[in-house]
Length: 201
Image (cartoon, rainbow, N blue to C red; front, top):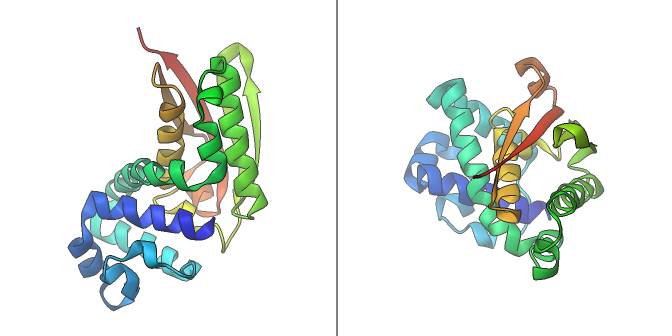
């Protein structure tokens, strides 16, 4: 799963920035499989240190807000591959699951993703459903160094991925994901996300 997630991350960034910009930005630090734009030929996950450097380089080039916006877009685009390559998401995309009542469907998708990320030691996450507010809370932390790549853009890559997943599960609703942590807590890997929903008229 780590390989699939990392491939999706770079596919998302390639769609947003293009290969030439990425290669110029990272210089000699760019792995050869990315220089050659052969993302699907990854045979091993990249070193977590690379993602720390990647994140810092993006912030230097585009600034904090710019790098966060790019990361969020990349996360949304990365999900296009994840939904076809990650078994729990393939299952969630089945007709039977997509026809479930709204809360059950969204709850199940968020719970399944959380379990998958926790099982593979990318995160230690728990979820709470707040029925009266029609919201969900995702709380915990990324596991470093293994979960470093999900931290890119002060967690905006991860948030974009979640947003895209939720919209894919139910396009009749709009979803908003807000960070309840401070920028300093983002850097430490703490996750505290509020997921809210609004029905389109």
